[in-house]
Image (cartoon, helix red, strand yellow):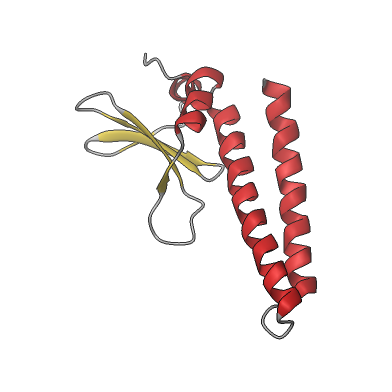
Length: 129
């Protein structure tokens, strides 16, 4: 068994897929992979706007290691929502200066949906911690 609580949570439930060189699982916008050669665990954010996954932060990794799979996934989702909210707020400021550039109503609606999602994940995370 590894020292990573997130990996241990998943292996207890037999939800792991295999390749020729690793074991992995994807859910909640996060991929976790254990490499056979060196027992290294890599966790990636799959909620990107491009084809490549992103590394998670050191703090997010600590949440996975210490609090498990769901807590780590919730933390990544909260951080992704925060980043998207910041981007939308920036676009709203541009739209206030140049109304033809962006639709403020649409941006405000997207922001509201993200705030609801962030709150939902924050509540789920608080129940675990």
